Length: 201
Image 1 (tube, rainbow, N blue to C red):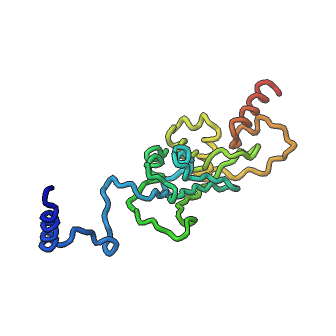
Image 2: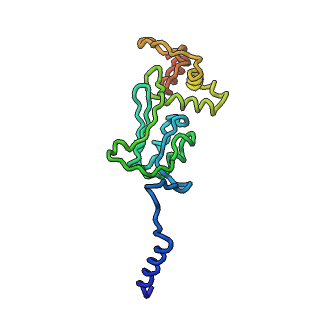
């Protein structure tokens, strides 16, 4: 523009008549657009603790910690790039959702976390982690009546309905055999059961 002073004068007069073009945030809440990607938040009801969100996170901001009989998923939103991969590839599509919260300032970065805890399922023979109980229940619901073909899904489904009790402590010196078929076991231990049963050791 050849006459910048006139442009500035025009902007000043417009501001006097219409008022300054500024928002009232933070005095009044600001409503983001519908597709705005804000803070990712876990849903206690819809998250099954499968850990798919941690697998697909490009920034590696989600930790999966298995301790005892509990799996804890911790999302560090101070390092998050808000790409939405965790929400897009969530197994249930509702376990973790990017909300509209964008005012995320904290004085201590250790507070910039969201987390969820789920009951963990371990192999009843060797103790290795299999997955969470809710994950097994979700798979059993998806496959429907075919769940009876998989002992792990069947036992987990019966456990969630209260039809089974916790098994007694298995003696460590007891050899693996047919009676162990209906334990919740990892693939390696189940393979050992079938090979021992079919080929007698």
